[in-house]
Image (cartoon, rainbow, N blue to C red; front, side, top):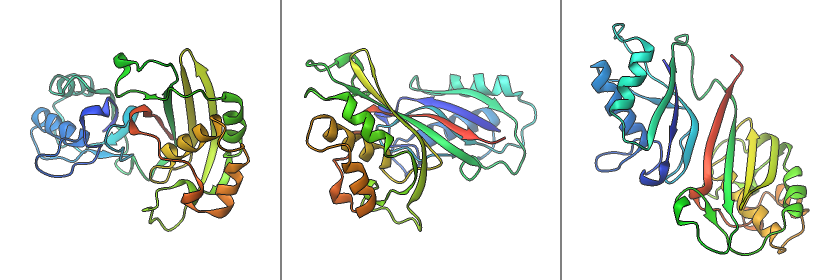
Length: 245
């Protein structure tokens, strides 16, 4: 079964189950699904979102031997056993070989930056409140330089240990939406903290510390120290996981 899941990650230590006493989204989903399907199972997610990061379109799979529960009833039953900040948006049957992570063709993330002078308490945990003035045009120009296939080592966490740090960014948009600035990034894959490092770097450009061409310098140097700070997790949401099927 393929599940599409939305959650507010503010109260959780990320997606991945971490052991006794650590509250995670995966753990909550597994506990609810086991109560409905009445056999042990694992919820295998596409993306391991960090603590405080949200999702509108996380994708996961479960394997069940219980054929008595139809998918619509399964979704409703699981949701009734989940906390209010997690919901299964849909459940559909997929081929046995479907892999939520390896089969993904890409992902879209959105980051929300609130630029008003007063902290928006009603959006606590959902946005990064940045009270300093920022210029959106340099950020747009810089974002355009990220599009394409590049080695993004300089915009990954210093702890990144994957064999290759080359990824393709299909779009990177910066738009003002009311009192917020939204950063939307779509790519074929992302390194650890890559989107948050992109946002932190674009904000430094927007406040005038660097010119837009700094992005090219970071890509060429492959040095994390040349990029901006890591933006807080609050404003980041996994919007969608893309599949060719």
